[in-house]
Image (cartoon, rainbow over all chains, first blue to last red; front, side):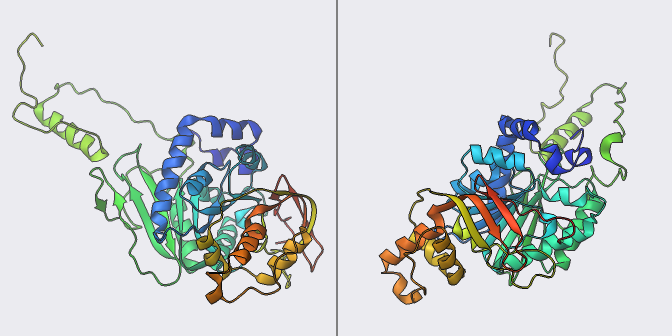
Length: 289
Length: 124
């Protein structure tokens, strides 16, 4: 992202009426949110017994992720701090219940009532101190503590996050673990800058099943743990507004077969469809080509 | 806001002991039909605070609920009860009104069906 929204303004101000409508009418965003929500629901590992569950959608916004939950047959309660976003959700007649609230103040829900929680692109907002009285760590503590309490035994919380850097991700993880959660990070397509998505999967109570593995270019599992190396983040500790630009050095030697094979392998790792390598790859063609 | 949510909401103000349930002061109530699913109802009944549900329903004008929830063993066959449970839990919507903390009297306004649970800096 060129400019991270959370660096521009607090969420209830950034997501005003115009921004809320823009967000919800962008078909690209709608599509992304739907995919992320489906994946988060998958990672919730709810029992497949056909019984609808009661889920929490944290940072539900205009109800894009909530719609995916409804489509999967569950009831949900959505929480968001932006009244404008919630108003759009009301207009769209979402099936879930909506709450105007600040997750950093604690969820205020009775113990054991929630069967699972998801959050799409919202938890990173907690890491910014938007008011002078805010201390991100305290807010994260209030959030994770209250979340842990309201989840029923064996329930999971899945957060799709866009952490600004490694420090932020670690802060979130640490607070979650301190609240009593188990679990870890699932990363889909770790090698692709475009496709890479991170999901924090938190469990409480006894865990019967293991955490799923992330997807890679072959859509197989590849194990990822919290300390996975991330080429993109962790290099810039200041705000991403001043990201050093990559300098393209023109290669004077031309494009050899070796170079071609390397580029193809890189592309494969990103998850693209690349023709197989053969004796014809990089073969010198007749002059008319 | 439906009663299923009201049954889970507590007052987060620092120092408050009697946080749950919040008292409902309705101004506008609407009914929205929802598909009847006995599996979901049986799943939820264990989590519901029955007294809060009965009181909440009463303040929204619905008095059909029995004072005590029946035994889980008889639940399977008790369809009339399940229907009443379904209606009160999922179909009654508080569109406009307030939720009131019984200990502090603090009001949480409800507009367009959305309760405003934002606390002031000095409350939490």
